[in-house]
Length: 151
Image (cartoon, rainbow, N blue to C red; front, side, top):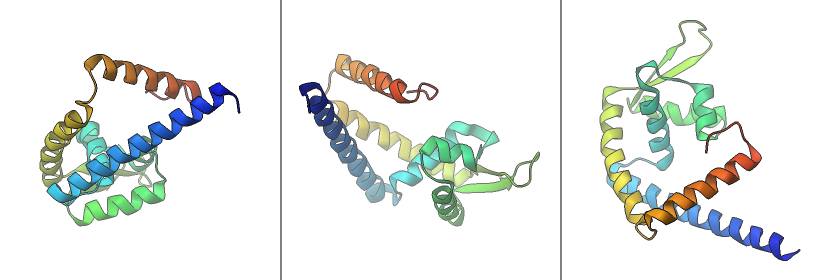
């Protein structure tokens, strides 16, 4: 392996390790403060962004980068807890649309405030210039293998 290849591999491992540590830390904080996992937070976040129109199961699967089977299981638990609602698409009854319930929206709002503070704490280690540069680099990497997806 040449020097560039070795450096790329080391960078990948560092990125993966750091990302996993951040995810594990945030997951632990969400569970401790709200009794919710990071997967649930991510799903509620996607539904909040979708607004009143909701989101199709397939779209949610692509946004969260998980299988539709995982989405079905995750959403089943959120339905059970009355944090979301589920309905058939008006144009195609085979298509499932998920929306936030009132209690889901309230929970997400509370979680989002805390989540933002936790992320700010973690990234306090970097300057504004560092975070902008990191975003730019991640965008370049993302575009390198899948130019159709936003960074």
